[in-house]
Image (spheres, rainbow, N blue to C red):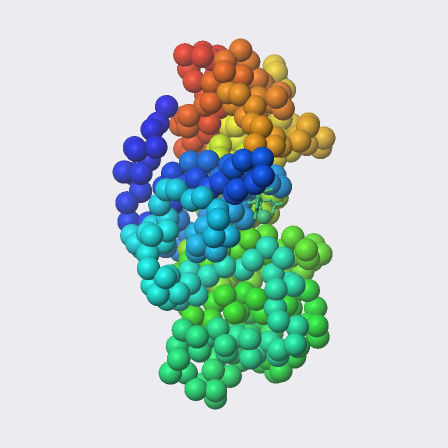
Length: 341
Ligand SMILES: Nc1ncnc2c1ncn2[C@@H]1O[C@H](COP(=O)(O)OP(=O)(O)OP(=O)(O)O)[C@@H](O)[C@H]1O
Ligand SMILES: [Mg+2]
């Protein structure tokens, strides 16, 4: 078992350090706890994948990282970007940090461009907001370079968003996010609305840019198989918590948490030494955040739930893959046989 404090100590010097982040949205029926005590790090040049079913809190985290949540959201914890807490910095400083140090490609970004403004002008606007000394000609030249960098001809700067295909628009959004050369890029389901071929192209573009620019990248999706291709590490979320984190390939191939077994489509069978792919996926639905089950929030859906699960909310345990998982199967006192017995 490992405490949050020890994990904090282990990761000083990250580009991004998120510490014990909790977020609740107000509602008529009381606060909705969307994110509950989340801790993770992203190093310079590292790709972290954030996975989990719809409603588990992925976009809420993404927005919190740049303080883009609705003003009535209740946020506690720390979001340290290069050691500075985004959650408490003055607004002037926050404006400088957005785009320049960290930027975000929003979920549904395909529809978030201004439909009546040329693509190039929208990108120039972002650049000039942060580099006011940039003149029109320099700005347009920079836009041309940026578009070419994401695989679009510079002349497409004169197009309106509706003249671009979905994949091209997504590339333009990535160009815009990179306009001020941030060190951290947050990409919230940037490929979900694209067909499989275009999705693969946008993914390989992101990977190429990430390498070239040594970007820290947080890539969010519900699809674990997309993350394994792209990421160095994966954090799996369930009901507002990170329930497993570790090296990408190992988590996909040998997940330690039964929820990740389900997400990756691989369930171990009792008595079967090897994992088998289970096309059926996960039974049941994610819980309502306002009415979380007692103990481990995953226990009502878990194929391996045992006696302590309804009463004990599991801490993070070290897992075989070198990361951590919040599952009582990994507690050698409660389950001496080990997770895969
Ligand atoms: N503005 C809001 N007001 C109230 N509740 C919200 C708001 N935004 C999100 N929520 C709730 O917070 C929880 C987390 O939502 P979030 O959008 O972060 O999930 P997600 O993991 O990004 O899901 P998806 O995969 O569907 O994008 C959900 O229960 C959602 O209903
Ligand atoms: Mg989302």
